[in-house]
Image (cartoon, rainbow, N blue to C red; front, side):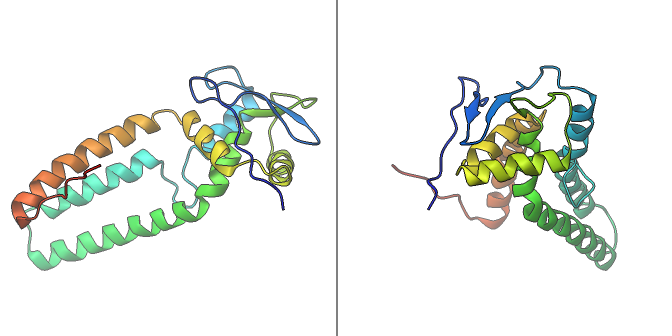
Length: 186
């Protein structure tokens, strides 16, 4: 059984170069030049697989549902539109959850270059070779996934805005329902 190995990161959460039994891998730091081929694939992978929308677009879609819910229209029309829109976005999120693991590995592979490879080139075949090697070496998928998240421009800002909105909505919902959020104690 292969032991799962967590990769080292620097102070900013970026992976440091690492080795497997077969290869040494260097890391392109986010913001450093990466070549047209890698950049093109980066922009493609930055679109959520299976939905055709970016994560920020999905967040905006839920805003649309909220706005739709307060429109001044007949209840039956409104209910139908809300259900249809929510169902569409739910299907998109289901697809996202199915693809998230692969997405993270491919996203990470854009910023990791095997020693001896041309750093500016990237393909799915090459990425699959990398991922196969990482899998055989027992590299933690979490190390690669969290590194991939760091490479997605603006994701942390969107998550912050989502948290703020959730906090505001919690206050509104507790006022309507009379329920309160449990207080965590340590």
